[in-house]
Length: 476
View 1 (cartoon, rainbow, N blue to C red):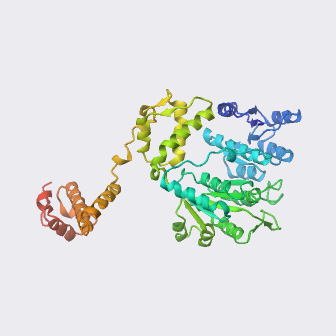
View 2 (cartoon, one colour):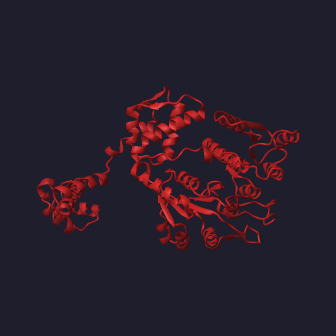
View 3 (spheres, rainbow, N blue to C red):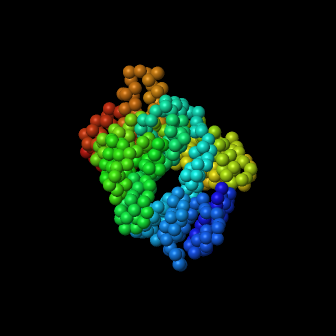
Protein backbone atom coordinates (compact mmCIF):
# COMPACT_ATOMS: atom_id res chain seq x y z
CA UNK A 1 0.00 0.00 0.00
CA UNK A 2 1.24 3.51 -0.80
CA UNK A 3 2.28 5.66 2.16
CA UNK A 4 0.32 8.34 3.97
CA UNK A 5 1.98 11.76 3.57
CA UNK A 6 2.08 14.13 6.54
CA UNK A 7 2.89 17.77 5.81
CA UNK A 8 3.26 20.10 8.82
CA UNK A 9 5.89 22.60 9.89
CA UNK A 10 5.24 21.66 13.54
CA UNK A 11 7.76 18.95 14.41
CA UNK A 12 5.75 17.75 17.42
CA UNK A 13 2.65 17.12 15.29
CA UNK A 14 4.70 15.18 12.74
CA UNK A 15 6.27 13.14 15.57
CA UNK A 16 2.88 12.23 17.11
CA UNK A 17 1.41 11.14 13.78
CA UNK A 18 4.57 9.27 12.79
CA UNK A 19 4.52 7.29 16.05
CA UNK A 20 0.79 6.62 15.78
CA UNK A 21 0.89 5.39 12.18
CA UNK A 22 4.07 3.39 12.73
CA UNK A 23 2.43 1.65 15.68
CA UNK A 24 -0.48 0.73 13.40
CA UNK A 25 1.97 -0.46 10.72
CA UNK A 26 0.73 2.17 8.24
CA UNK A 27 3.41 3.29 5.77
CA UNK A 28 4.11 7.02 5.92
CA UNK A 29 6.30 9.91 4.73
CA UNK A 30 6.53 13.25 6.53
CA UNK A 31 7.50 16.69 5.25
CA UNK A 32 8.10 20.00 7.01
CA UNK A 33 6.59 22.10 4.21
CA UNK A 34 4.44 21.99 1.12
CA UNK A 35 7.56 22.78 -0.92
CA UNK A 36 9.26 19.58 0.29
CA UNK A 37 6.23 17.47 -0.50
CA UNK A 38 5.86 18.91 -4.00
CA UNK A 39 9.59 18.48 -4.65
CA UNK A 40 9.26 14.79 -3.79
CA UNK A 41 6.36 14.47 -6.20
CA UNK A 42 8.14 16.37 -8.98
CA UNK A 43 11.19 14.13 -8.54
CA UNK A 44 9.08 11.15 -9.54
CA UNK A 45 8.17 9.99 -6.04
CA UNK A 46 5.18 7.71 -5.60
CA UNK A 47 2.01 9.72 -4.82
CA UNK A 48 0.48 9.17 -1.39
CA UNK A 49 -2.46 7.00 -0.43
CA UNK A 50 -3.72 9.86 1.73
CA UNK A 51 -2.43 13.41 2.24
CA UNK A 52 -2.61 14.94 5.74
CA UNK A 53 -1.61 18.61 5.69
CA UNK A 54 -1.61 21.62 7.98
CA UNK A 55 -3.22 24.80 6.61
CA UNK A 56 -0.86 27.53 7.79
CA UNK A 57 2.80 26.87 6.98
CA UNK A 58 5.72 28.99 5.81
CA UNK A 59 5.68 29.25 2.03
CA UNK A 60 2.76 27.56 0.31
CA UNK A 61 -0.28 26.96 2.48
CA UNK A 62 -2.07 23.69 2.97
CA UNK A 63 -4.98 24.95 0.89
CA UNK A 64 -2.63 25.67 -2.02
CA UNK A 65 -1.15 22.20 -1.59
CA UNK A 66 -4.66 20.76 -1.54
CA UNK A 67 -5.50 22.48 -4.83
CA UNK A 68 -2.30 21.31 -6.54
CA UNK A 69 -2.77 17.70 -5.45
CA UNK A 70 -6.43 17.71 -6.45
CA UNK A 71 -5.51 18.91 -9.92
CA UNK A 72 -3.13 15.95 -10.34
CA UNK A 73 -5.02 13.33 -8.31
CA UNK A 74 -8.73 14.24 -8.12
CA UNK A 75 -9.63 11.09 -6.15
CA UNK A 76 -6.91 11.51 -3.52
CA UNK A 77 -8.37 11.90 0.00
CA UNK A 78 -6.85 14.98 1.67
CA UNK A 79 -7.23 15.69 5.38
CA UNK A 80 -6.66 19.32 6.37
CA UNK A 81 -5.38 20.14 9.89
CA UNK A 82 -5.30 23.53 11.55
CA UNK A 83 -4.94 25.07 14.98
CA UNK A 84 -7.16 27.92 13.78
CA UNK A 85 -10.57 26.28 14.05
CA UNK A 86 -12.54 29.03 12.35
CA UNK A 87 -15.43 28.63 9.96
CA UNK A 88 -13.55 30.27 7.08
CA UNK A 89 -10.75 27.68 7.23
CA UNK A 90 -13.23 24.82 7.41
CA UNK A 91 -15.27 26.16 4.51
CA UNK A 92 -12.16 26.71 2.40
CA UNK A 93 -10.93 23.18 3.12
CA UNK A 94 -14.19 21.49 2.12
CA UNK A 95 -14.76 23.75 -0.85
CA UNK A 96 -11.29 22.84 -2.08
CA UNK A 97 -12.24 19.17 -2.06
CA UNK A 98 -10.82 18.06 1.29
CA UNK A 99 -11.88 14.62 2.50
CA UNK A 100 -12.15 15.88 6.07
CA UNK A 101 -11.19 18.78 8.33
CA UNK A 102 -9.27 18.07 11.57
CA UNK A 103 -9.00 20.94 14.08
CA UNK A 104 -6.04 21.01 16.48
CA UNK A 105 -5.52 19.95 19.17
CA UNK A 106 -6.94 16.61 18.08
CA UNK A 107 -7.46 13.30 19.80
CA UNK A 108 -4.90 10.82 18.44
CA UNK A 109 -7.47 8.02 18.18
CA UNK A 110 -9.82 10.35 16.32
CA UNK A 111 -7.06 11.30 13.89
CA UNK A 112 -6.15 7.63 13.37
CA UNK A 113 -9.76 6.67 12.69
CA UNK A 114 -10.04 9.52 10.21
CA UNK A 115 -6.89 8.42 8.38
CA UNK A 116 -8.16 4.84 8.29
CA UNK A 117 -11.41 6.03 6.70
CA UNK A 118 -9.46 8.04 4.17
CA UNK A 119 -7.33 4.97 3.33
CA UNK A 120 -10.53 2.94 2.90
CA UNK A 121 -11.88 5.59 0.54
CA UNK A 122 -8.63 5.63 -1.42
CA UNK A 123 -8.58 1.85 -1.77
CA UNK A 124 -12.18 1.85 -2.87
CA UNK A 125 -11.47 4.48 -5.52
CA UNK A 126 -8.62 2.31 -6.78
CA UNK A 127 -10.81 -0.78 -6.91
CA UNK A 128 -8.77 -2.59 -4.27
CA UNK A 129 -10.23 -4.58 -1.37
CA UNK A 130 -11.41 -2.10 1.23
CA UNK A 131 -12.00 -2.27 4.97
CA UNK A 132 -15.58 -3.37 4.45
CA UNK A 133 -14.51 -6.59 2.77
CA UNK A 134 -12.06 -7.34 5.57
CA UNK A 135 -14.51 -6.77 8.41
CA UNK A 136 -15.82 -9.76 10.36
CA UNK A 137 -19.50 -10.45 10.57
CA UNK A 138 -21.39 -8.90 13.46
CA UNK A 139 -20.97 -10.89 16.66
CA UNK A 140 -23.89 -11.72 18.92
CA UNK A 141 -25.81 -14.66 20.34
CA UNK A 142 -28.37 -12.77 22.43
CA UNK A 143 -32.02 -13.06 21.33
CA UNK A 144 -32.14 -9.30 20.69
CA UNK A 145 -29.22 -9.62 18.26
CA UNK A 146 -30.81 -12.61 16.55
CA UNK A 147 -33.71 -10.31 15.70
CA UNK A 148 -31.24 -7.90 14.11
CA UNK A 149 -29.68 -10.73 12.10
CA UNK A 150 -33.12 -11.82 10.90
CA UNK A 151 -33.91 -8.26 9.82
CA UNK A 152 -30.66 -8.08 7.83
CA UNK A 153 -31.55 -11.38 6.19
CA UNK A 154 -35.01 -10.17 5.22
CA UNK A 155 -33.50 -7.02 3.76
CA UNK A 156 -30.96 -8.95 1.66
CA UNK A 157 -33.02 -8.80 -1.53
CA UNK A 158 -34.55 -5.40 -0.89
CA UNK A 159 -33.56 -1.85 -1.71
CA UNK A 160 -35.99 -0.32 0.75
CA UNK A 161 -34.95 2.63 2.88
CA UNK A 162 -33.87 1.56 6.37
CA UNK A 163 -33.87 3.45 9.66
CA UNK A 164 -31.54 2.06 12.34
CA UNK A 165 -32.14 3.21 15.90
CA UNK A 166 -30.01 2.56 18.95
CA UNK A 167 -27.84 4.19 21.57
CA UNK A 168 -24.49 5.76 20.73
CA UNK A 169 -21.76 3.16 20.40
CA UNK A 170 -24.15 0.26 19.84
CA UNK A 171 -22.87 -0.44 16.31
CA UNK A 172 -25.39 1.19 13.98
CA UNK A 173 -22.86 1.74 11.19
CA UNK A 174 -21.76 -1.88 11.43
CA UNK A 175 -25.37 -2.97 10.87
CA UNK A 176 -25.69 -0.54 7.96
CA UNK A 177 -22.58 -2.02 6.36
CA UNK A 178 -23.95 -5.53 6.87
CA UNK A 179 -27.23 -4.58 5.21
CA UNK A 180 -25.25 -3.21 2.25
CA UNK A 181 -22.88 -6.17 2.08
CA UNK A 182 -25.77 -8.65 1.89
CA UNK A 183 -27.77 -6.61 -0.64
CA UNK A 184 -27.76 -6.65 -4.46
CA UNK A 185 -25.70 -3.42 -4.23
CA UNK A 186 -22.79 -5.11 -2.46
CA UNK A 187 -20.38 -4.47 -5.33
CA UNK A 188 -21.26 -0.77 -5.42
CA UNK A 189 -19.98 1.96 -3.05
CA UNK A 190 -20.95 2.25 0.60
CA UNK A 191 -20.56 5.90 1.61
CA UNK A 192 -21.06 7.01 5.22
CA UNK A 193 -21.51 10.54 6.52
CA UNK A 194 -22.17 11.71 10.08
CA UNK A 195 -24.59 14.58 9.59
CA UNK A 196 -23.98 15.81 13.15
CA UNK A 197 -20.21 16.08 12.72
CA UNK A 198 -20.19 18.49 9.77
CA UNK A 199 -20.94 22.22 10.19
CA UNK A 200 -24.37 23.07 8.82
CA UNK A 201 -22.81 25.57 6.39
CA UNK A 202 -20.84 22.76 4.77
CA UNK A 203 -23.35 19.93 4.93
CA UNK A 204 -25.23 20.85 1.75
CA UNK A 205 -22.04 20.85 -0.32
CA UNK A 206 -20.90 17.66 1.41
CA UNK A 207 -24.11 15.84 0.50
CA UNK A 208 -24.82 17.22 -2.96
CA UNK A 209 -21.46 18.57 -4.15
CA UNK A 210 -20.85 21.95 -5.77
CA UNK A 211 -19.99 23.46 -9.12
CA UNK A 212 -16.76 25.27 -9.80
CA UNK A 213 -17.11 28.96 -9.04
CA UNK A 214 -20.44 28.51 -7.26
CA UNK A 215 -19.08 30.47 -4.29
CA UNK A 216 -15.84 32.07 -3.16
CA UNK A 217 -13.13 29.42 -2.93
CA UNK A 218 -14.92 26.81 -5.04
CA UNK A 219 -11.93 26.32 -7.30
CA UNK A 220 -13.06 22.99 -8.71
CA UNK A 221 -16.20 20.98 -9.15
CA UNK A 222 -16.71 18.63 -6.21
CA UNK A 223 -18.75 15.48 -6.03
CA UNK A 224 -21.08 15.14 -3.08
CA UNK A 225 -21.77 11.97 -1.13
CA UNK A 226 -24.84 11.20 -3.23
CA UNK A 227 -22.70 11.14 -6.37
CA UNK A 228 -19.98 9.10 -4.66
CA UNK A 229 -22.56 6.52 -3.57
CA UNK A 230 -24.27 6.26 -6.97
CA UNK A 231 -25.68 2.77 -7.46
CA UNK A 232 -24.76 1.84 -3.90
CA UNK A 233 -25.70 2.82 -0.37
CA UNK A 234 -25.54 6.18 1.39
CA UNK A 235 -25.46 5.90 5.18
CA UNK A 236 -26.70 9.03 6.95
CA UNK A 237 -25.63 8.72 10.58
CA UNK A 238 -27.23 10.83 13.33
CA UNK A 239 -29.98 11.93 10.96
CA UNK A 240 -31.93 13.39 13.88
CA UNK A 241 -29.45 16.28 14.07
CA UNK A 242 -29.84 17.32 10.43
CA UNK A 243 -30.67 21.07 10.07
CA UNK A 244 -34.22 21.90 8.96
CA UNK A 245 -33.22 23.35 5.58
CA UNK A 246 -31.24 20.21 4.72
CA UNK A 247 -34.19 18.05 5.78
CA UNK A 248 -36.22 19.79 3.08
CA UNK A 249 -33.60 19.10 0.39
CA UNK A 250 -33.20 15.48 1.47
CA UNK A 251 -36.96 14.99 1.36
CA UNK A 252 -36.99 16.29 -2.20
CA UNK A 253 -34.31 13.80 -3.23
CA UNK A 254 -36.16 10.92 -1.58
CA UNK A 255 -39.39 12.01 -3.24
CA UNK A 256 -38.32 12.26 -6.88
CA UNK A 257 -34.71 11.03 -6.99
CA UNK A 258 -33.30 14.32 -8.33
CA UNK A 259 -31.00 16.91 -6.79
CA UNK A 260 -28.76 19.83 -7.77
CA UNK A 261 -25.16 20.51 -6.90
CA UNK A 262 -24.66 23.78 -5.02
CA UNK A 263 -24.53 26.40 -7.76
CA UNK A 264 -25.73 23.90 -10.36
CA UNK A 265 -28.62 24.32 -12.79
CA UNK A 266 -28.93 20.82 -14.22
CA UNK A 267 -30.68 18.19 -12.11
CA UNK A 268 -28.80 14.99 -11.33
CA UNK A 269 -30.60 11.66 -11.05
CA UNK A 270 -29.65 9.42 -8.17
CA UNK A 271 -30.12 5.70 -7.68
CA UNK A 272 -28.86 5.44 -4.13
CA UNK A 273 -30.23 3.38 -1.29
CA UNK A 274 -30.60 5.39 1.90
CA UNK A 275 -29.85 3.90 5.31
CA UNK A 276 -30.29 6.39 8.13
CA UNK A 277 -29.43 6.03 11.80
CA UNK A 278 -30.05 7.94 15.00
CA UNK A 279 -29.73 7.59 18.75
CA UNK A 280 -32.59 10.03 19.23
CA UNK A 281 -36.34 9.52 19.47
CA UNK A 282 -37.39 10.82 16.05
CA UNK A 283 -41.10 10.65 16.90
CA UNK A 284 -40.46 12.97 19.85
CA UNK A 285 -38.44 15.33 17.67
CA UNK A 286 -41.31 15.38 15.17
CA UNK A 287 -43.73 16.34 17.96
CA UNK A 288 -41.31 19.07 19.07
CA UNK A 289 -41.14 20.46 15.55
CA UNK A 290 -37.43 19.66 15.23
CA UNK A 291 -37.78 17.02 12.52
CA UNK A 292 -40.06 16.98 9.49
CA UNK A 293 -42.85 14.46 9.82
CA UNK A 294 -42.96 13.77 6.07
CA UNK A 295 -39.20 13.08 6.05
CA UNK A 296 -39.58 10.80 9.05
CA UNK A 297 -42.15 8.70 7.21
CA UNK A 298 -39.90 8.59 4.10
CA UNK A 299 -37.03 7.25 6.22
CA UNK A 300 -39.06 4.99 8.48
CA UNK A 301 -39.89 2.41 5.80
CA UNK A 302 -38.17 -0.46 7.60
CA UNK A 303 -36.88 0.10 11.11
CA UNK A 304 -34.14 -1.94 12.76
CA UNK A 305 -33.65 -1.39 16.48
CA UNK A 306 -30.17 -2.19 17.74
CA UNK A 307 -30.08 -3.24 21.42
CA UNK A 308 -27.74 -1.65 23.93
CA UNK A 309 -24.94 -3.77 25.36
CA UNK A 310 -26.70 -4.05 28.73
CA UNK A 311 -29.62 -5.69 26.89
CA UNK A 312 -27.30 -8.37 25.52
CA UNK A 313 -24.97 -9.10 28.44
CA UNK A 314 -24.49 -12.68 27.29
CA UNK A 315 -22.60 -11.27 24.29
CA UNK A 316 -20.03 -9.43 26.41
CA UNK A 317 -17.64 -12.45 26.74
CA UNK A 318 -17.48 -13.19 23.00
CA UNK A 319 -17.19 -9.51 22.14
CA UNK A 320 -14.47 -8.93 24.74
CA UNK A 321 -12.42 -11.91 23.52
CA UNK A 322 -12.86 -10.81 19.91
CA UNK A 323 -11.74 -7.25 20.63
CA UNK A 324 -8.68 -8.46 22.54
CA UNK A 325 -7.67 -10.59 19.54
CA UNK A 326 -8.39 -7.75 17.13
CA UNK A 327 -6.30 -5.27 19.12
CA UNK A 328 -3.42 -7.73 19.38
CA UNK A 329 -3.50 -8.26 15.61
CA UNK A 330 -3.56 -4.51 14.92
CA UNK A 331 -0.70 -3.84 17.32
CA UNK A 332 1.34 -6.86 16.23
CA UNK A 333 1.56 -8.32 19.74
CA UNK A 334 0.60 -11.58 21.40
CA UNK A 335 -3.08 -11.80 22.26
CA UNK A 336 -4.27 -11.57 25.86
CA UNK A 337 -7.16 -13.28 27.60
CA UNK A 338 -9.51 -12.43 30.45
CA UNK A 339 -9.59 -14.24 33.79
CA UNK A 340 -12.98 -15.58 34.82
CA UNK A 341 -13.24 -12.96 37.59
CA UNK A 342 -12.50 -10.08 35.23
CA UNK A 343 -14.94 -11.36 32.61
CA UNK A 344 -17.66 -11.89 35.21
CA UNK A 345 -17.19 -8.33 36.46
CA UNK A 346 -17.42 -6.93 32.91
CA UNK A 347 -20.66 -8.83 32.36
CA UNK A 348 -22.16 -7.16 35.42
CA UNK A 349 -21.47 -3.59 34.28
CA UNK A 350 -23.75 -1.23 32.39
CA UNK A 351 -21.57 0.02 29.53
CA UNK A 352 -22.95 3.50 28.84
CA UNK A 353 -20.78 3.67 25.70
CA UNK A 354 -21.99 0.22 24.60
CA UNK A 355 -19.90 -1.90 22.21
CA UNK A 356 -17.61 1.00 21.33
CA UNK A 357 -16.70 1.45 24.99
CA UNK A 358 -15.95 -2.28 25.34
CA UNK A 359 -13.77 -2.22 22.22
CA UNK A 360 -11.83 0.80 23.48
CA UNK A 361 -11.36 -0.94 26.84
CA UNK A 362 -9.92 -4.03 25.15
CA UNK A 363 -7.52 -1.90 23.14
CA UNK A 364 -6.44 -0.14 26.34
CA UNK A 365 -5.89 -3.47 28.08
CA UNK A 366 -3.86 -4.82 25.17
CA UNK A 367 -1.48 -1.90 25.65
CA UNK A 368 -1.59 -1.39 29.43
CA UNK A 369 -2.26 -4.74 31.13
CA UNK A 370 1.09 -6.12 32.40
CA UNK A 371 0.50 -9.84 31.84
CA UNK A 372 -1.09 -12.08 29.26
CA UNK A 373 -3.94 -12.90 31.65
CA UNK A 374 -6.11 -9.84 32.27
CA UNK A 375 -7.14 -9.84 35.92
CA UNK A 376 -9.78 -7.74 37.68
CA UNK A 377 -7.00 -5.56 39.10
CA UNK A 378 -5.85 -4.71 35.55
CA UNK A 379 -9.10 -2.94 34.64
CA UNK A 380 -9.14 0.87 34.68
CA UNK A 381 -10.02 2.23 38.15
CA UNK A 382 -13.39 3.62 37.05
CA UNK A 383 -14.48 0.15 35.94
CA UNK A 384 -12.63 -1.86 38.56
CA UNK A 385 -14.24 0.08 41.40
CA UNK A 386 -17.67 0.31 39.82
CA UNK A 387 -20.33 -1.70 41.57
CA UNK A 388 -22.07 -4.35 39.49
CA UNK A 389 -25.36 -3.03 38.19
CA UNK A 390 -27.26 -5.57 40.32
CA UNK A 391 -25.91 -3.84 43.46
CA UNK A 392 -27.01 -0.37 42.45
CA UNK A 393 -30.24 1.06 43.85
CA UNK A 394 -32.04 -0.09 40.73
CA UNK A 395 -35.49 0.06 42.29
CA UNK A 396 -37.31 -0.28 39.00
CA UNK A 397 -35.66 -3.62 38.26
CA UNK A 398 -36.34 -4.79 41.82
CA UNK A 399 -39.94 -3.63 41.50
CA UNK A 400 -40.31 -5.59 38.29
CA UNK A 401 -39.02 -8.73 40.00
CA UNK A 402 -41.53 -8.26 42.84
CA UNK A 403 -44.37 -7.73 40.36
CA UNK A 404 -43.47 -10.99 38.63
CA UNK A 405 -43.48 -12.82 41.98
CA UNK A 406 -46.84 -11.42 43.11
CA UNK A 407 -48.52 -12.06 39.78
CA UNK A 408 -47.97 -15.75 40.45
CA UNK A 409 -48.31 -15.92 44.23
CA UNK A 410 -51.05 -13.36 44.91
CA UNK A 411 -53.05 -12.49 41.76
CA UNK A 412 -55.73 -9.87 42.28
CA UNK A 413 -53.83 -8.15 45.10
CA UNK A 414 -50.72 -6.98 43.24
CA UNK A 415 -51.64 -3.31 42.80
CA UNK A 416 -52.94 -2.82 46.34
CA UNK A 417 -50.00 -4.53 48.04
CA UNK A 418 -47.33 -2.74 46.02
CA UNK A 419 -49.05 0.65 46.29
CA UNK A 420 -49.25 0.34 50.08
CA UNK A 421 -45.63 -0.79 50.31
CA UNK A 422 -44.51 2.10 48.11
CA UNK A 423 -46.46 4.72 50.07
CA UNK A 424 -45.26 3.31 53.39
CA UNK A 425 -41.62 3.67 52.39
CA UNK A 426 -42.18 7.08 50.84
CA UNK A 427 -43.93 8.62 53.85
CA UNK A 428 -41.66 6.95 56.41
CA UNK A 429 -38.54 8.35 54.71
CA UNK A 430 -40.05 11.82 54.45
CA UNK A 431 -40.99 11.81 58.14
CA UNK A 432 -37.51 10.68 59.10
CA UNK A 433 -36.10 13.46 56.95
CA UNK A 434 -38.23 16.12 58.70
CA UNK A 435 -37.93 14.74 62.22
CA UNK A 436 -41.58 13.64 62.27
CA UNK A 437 -43.04 17.00 61.18
CA UNK A 438 -46.00 16.06 58.99
CA UNK A 439 -46.66 19.41 57.33
CA UNK A 440 -43.03 19.73 56.32
CA UNK A 441 -43.00 16.10 55.13
CA UNK A 442 -46.10 16.71 53.00
CA UNK A 443 -44.53 19.81 51.47
CA UNK A 444 -41.33 17.91 50.75
CA UNK A 445 -43.26 15.13 49.01
CA UNK A 446 -45.49 17.55 47.13
CA UNK A 447 -48.77 16.28 48.62
CA UNK A 448 -51.44 17.96 50.80
CA UNK A 449 -51.51 18.13 54.60
CA UNK A 450 -54.76 16.20 54.80
CA UNK A 451 -53.46 13.55 52.40
CA UNK A 452 -50.42 12.71 54.50
CA UNK A 453 -52.53 12.58 57.67
CA UNK A 454 -54.97 10.18 56.05
CA UNK A 455 -52.19 8.00 54.63
CA UNK A 456 -50.45 7.79 58.01
CA UNK A 457 -53.66 6.53 59.58
CA UNK A 458 -54.48 4.07 56.75
CA UNK A 459 -50.99 2.62 56.72
CA UNK A 460 -50.70 2.46 60.51
CA UNK A 461 -47.62 4.65 60.63
CA UNK A 462 -48.50 6.62 63.78
CA UNK A 463 -46.77 4.32 66.21
CA UNK A 464 -44.15 3.04 63.80
CA UNK A 465 -42.80 6.43 62.78
CA UNK A 466 -43.46 8.50 65.84
CA UNK A 467 -44.93 11.06 63.48
CA UNK A 468 -46.08 14.32 64.98
CA UNK A 469 -49.73 15.18 64.55
CA UNK A 470 -51.01 18.01 62.39
CA UNK A 471 -51.77 20.31 65.29
CA UNK A 472 -48.41 20.14 67.02
CA UNK A 473 -44.78 20.38 66.07
CA UNK A 474 -42.27 17.69 66.85
CA UNK A 475 -39.52 18.78 69.24
CA UNK A 476 -36.63 20.42 67.45
